Length: 116
Image 1: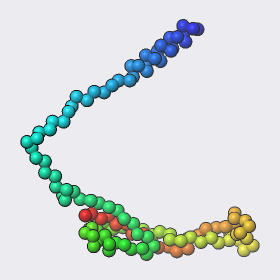
Image 2: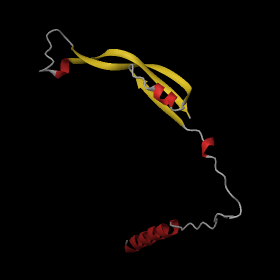
Image 3: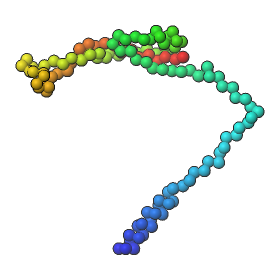
Image 4: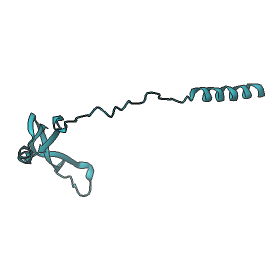
């Protein structure tokens, strides 16, 4: 029994030691000082997705800043909720279990994909 325990300990230690390998990366980047790298930062285009819900609209600020609309979507969204009693004799203050939450105002959510 002792030999089995010793063998299992040695076996676990051997697995632990053999599974840990070091990785050596010999690929070093070659830097040529004679070649100039011209990066054009203006060629990179930035994209952003913004959402406006329930009558809010701040899109004109982005358009004045030079953003262009690539895609526009609209979805129906619940703007506000209201609580109503489930029955006529329900006291919502005392018994919160008889409270039902319903949508109060339904509006529109607009999603814009912008690019600059």
